[in-house]
Length: 242
Image (cartoon, rainbow, N blue to C red):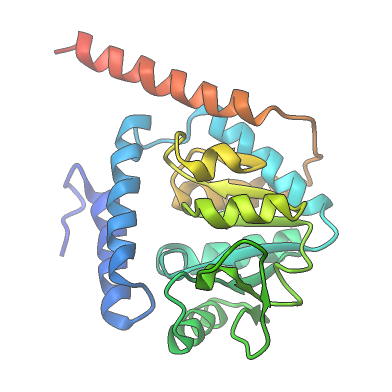
């Protein structure tokens, strides 16, 4: 039991959820490594939604609302951390949910789909048996549902996934990513990058969707640059305070 008074309570609670998901088979051991990497960058942003991320979340909600065939990709970590929240976002934006995992055992696909169903999802794609193969992707990430990511014009990819992001952009899709590392290949190749923690970003996007926000022009390079400026200023401030 993690005491609520612990200064790292929220972060440790998220880590515990991933640990439990690994034990249950929904997430895999590399998911723990990914979680730790995200924690590192969350420290750098101050563990809060920075202004550039909030603006990106507004734009992301608008892109999903305006899309012809929006799809939200879900892996084990996403299901473990915010299954209910991602289901709510899907409903508010009329998006489909699709299971997509690197370590693609069928049992784990089914478990993630079941977790989303328990959280209120009416339909979950990505459990097969029929898949399309994304050109240029040799991993299981390249196996996508013909009625989901394959047909999508806008895809939300929560959590880092550089090779798939790059491949989907090459297919002509608008790819929105949530990645706490603004320097990753995921962040730099995406159409729109949200530098924020998943557990903050998804609810923020849902709130914007409820406001029926409209899409506007954006410069993803500037969004990333602004996040780096924020991190640099915060580090400078911490050094001065020592």
